[in-house]
Length: 317
Ligand SMILES: [Zn+2]
Image 1 (cartoon, rainbow, N blue to C red):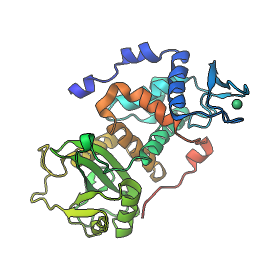
Image 2 (cartoon, rainbow, N blue to C red; image 1 turned 180 degrees about the vertical axis):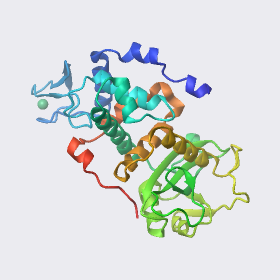
Image 3 (cartoon, helix red, strand yellow; image 1 turned 90 degrees about the horizontal axis):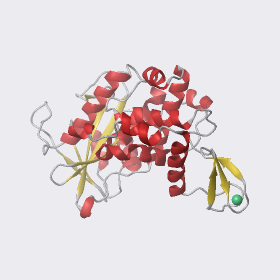
Image 4 (cartoon, rainbow, N blue to C red; image 1 turned 90 degrees about the vertical axis):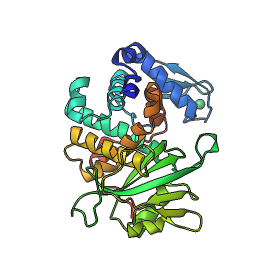
């Protein structure tokens, strides 16, 4: 509970981001941090003029949102920032209907806005590989499991026609949980496991899983794979127990899905998971959520409405 209370309160949010100028400035800080070269001459010095950025060398001007998921938006940035705040400050997440109601925009507008913010977070998460060394070079292992979307753990045969995913978390000595990653897969096959490892894990990491045969594919000359079979079917509640962090993340995903998204269309699942992992991985710094969301936007790419609606499911394997 304490952790939740430590977040940015609505009042604090209003104090910091209630004006268009404040939001433009915050986005600009993030864009300068990752570098925003002039599209004409490549110069990296620029100035702000309203919602436009100008090159100090050739005076070319462009929008502060250009080239990102916000590109071409007609919405005030205060609406975007409020959406960031709403989407990142609750553990359960928020449906597009609820988001639209709270922002005072139509359902399609809210849906497209949320889709783009989730995409920015997903793109950011895609650049992180699990299994680097922890703080102070502490060793880290990765725990992975097979999950049917909705959060139920895979119990052997599993229900047909359900979306399957592999979930993994970093785990430091003493049981503290690091980053979490989740990806939808074609099935629980060796190929999918290899694809997951290539996409989400550092090359030389120690992976712990249960006895599912396909997980043997986690083992390579560089990467070691350890099978941990727990005696009981019920996951242990102890923090130090194997897979505790992973089980917690899966349970939280399940709760979030039940609370807000009765069913996610398969073509939007990967962005939903990306945003869920992005938020989970930043929960230790709730005050930093808005600047972090700005950094995700700053490093994102354009997603047109047409493409957002016409996507195909992303499945590894
Ligand atoms: Zn220029």
